[in-house]
Amino acid sequence: MVADVKMTFEIPDEVAERFKTSVPSGSRSYFLTSLLQSGLSGAENDLEAACDKANALKLDLSEWEKLNESEAW
Image (cartoon, rainbow, N blue to C red):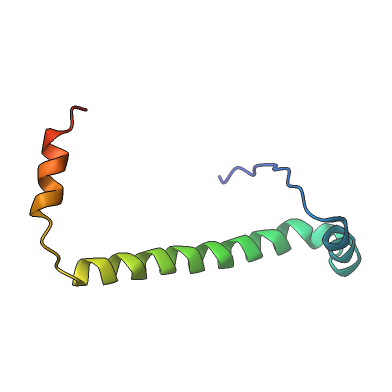
């Protein structure tokens, strides 16, 4: 079973009016969920691509690692 979560957002009046007139009330949650999933997938893909590029650089991190070793956590 998947639990639904209610959330509150602040958006500009103009956007809210366009949303209310363009998307029927029974479809709004689905519409927003689809947009959020799409946007989050894009952001996650961008982050993964950035990590892949950083890992491909194969930088000498020995000096950085020395700094981490001296940190007291």
